[in-house]
Length: 114
Image: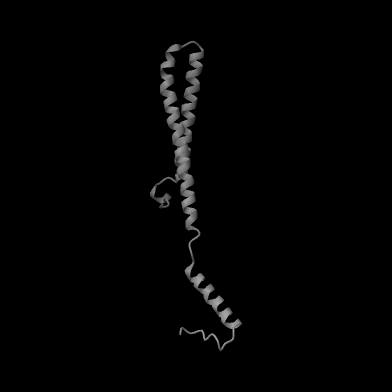
């Protein structure tokens, strides 16, 4: 996955999680206000209750979704850190072969392809 470049105005993936959490908090506060209004005796506010609960549910799903995406991005980027260094691997193979040749009788292993 492509990394986001702040110079192009793209927000880092963590920004979406923070935005979803703010939205969740706003709907939670709105739900609390409606519940207080209903408890005070205003039954008309109960009509808004279903709408706010549905919005709250969507906001909660957005938070979980964005967090999951962010974790997946982190896991995917972590895999790239372990790329093979083929030059170092080749050098290690050559070093080990040289040690094997030195340990054996020089007459038996010439070191050349036959």
